[in-house]
Amino acid sequence: MTTPSSRGGPGLLHGRSELGVAALLGALAVIVAVDTANIRQTAVNSGVMGPQVVPAIIATGLALCAIALAISVLRGGHADPEEGEDIDLSIPAHWPTVFGLAGLILGYALVLDPLGYVVASSLLFYGSALLLGSRRFVWALLIGVALSVATFYGFVLGLGIPLPAGLLTGIL
Image 1 (tube, rainbow, N blue to C red):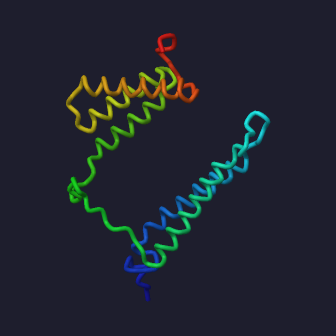
Image 2: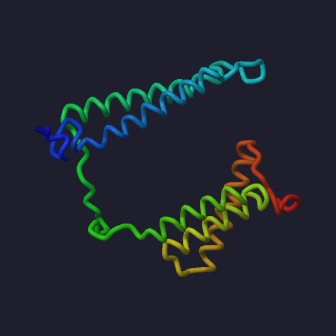
Image 3: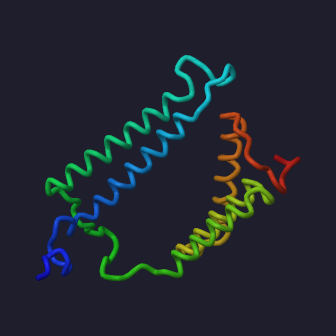
């Protein structure tokens, strides 16, 4: 005799896909906690709080969210299904767009160092805008360049974090 859960019917975990999200949050909490424990405190990075405080808070928050979500799901709670304000949920995903965006992100990772942040990010924005349906070719490129340059200078001048200049090394 088969049990209902082995036939695909209602069982203990049927309809509880949110437990996967709780497991993912728990795994992230463990990863962040392990990495936090491996941070070496030196004279250079020691301060009032030290370099381990913020990652420890994040790991604790992730763990608490994972536990709370798991308890909620096991007690019968579940998220409401997406209603889709502006979209028709009966239409499946447009996979060429999804794979095109994934390819753009992979290409971005490959060309970030040689081309530099500004050029690579501008191309990423431009390509994403076109893949998502924009037909304002010049505006998409100009907005991508403006956002990339502003972000570049925000990090380099504002935060002191160097980003790769690539092709524009003497210009930026």
